[in-house]
Amino acid sequence: MSKYRILTFALLLVLTGAKTSDVANNKANDYDIYIPPTSSIVCDSLKKGLRSQINQKQKIDFLLIRNRKLLKAISQRKKTLITQLRENQTKLRSRKLKNVYKIKTLEEKIIRQGCPGILTPSFARENS
Image (tube, rainbow, N blue to C red; front, side, top):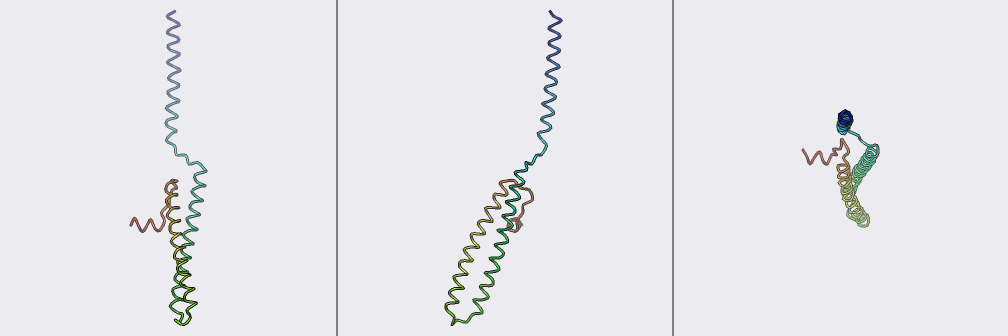
């Protein structure tokens, strides 16, 4: 009976040793970096949205500059045109403000998502 006990004890040692080596291999694999494809798709869509919002902001800035030039060029007699340009200017300013808020929220979403390589011009100015 002691032979069977020794044999079962040896068998248990061998089996537990095999299990620990598998666990050690799995722990080594846990440090590998895996980026799921869905997160990269989400990051790409967020980056694309950010680019479009920045382009829209630049267009609004250009329209504001053009509007200011028109206001300076128009004579004071054309009051209806001046009021229309001023209304247009306030609408453009409010649209620009909304756009800036959208850009900030998109930047925050991108950072929360953990997308690599995001440094927008506004962040670059704030950090330098």
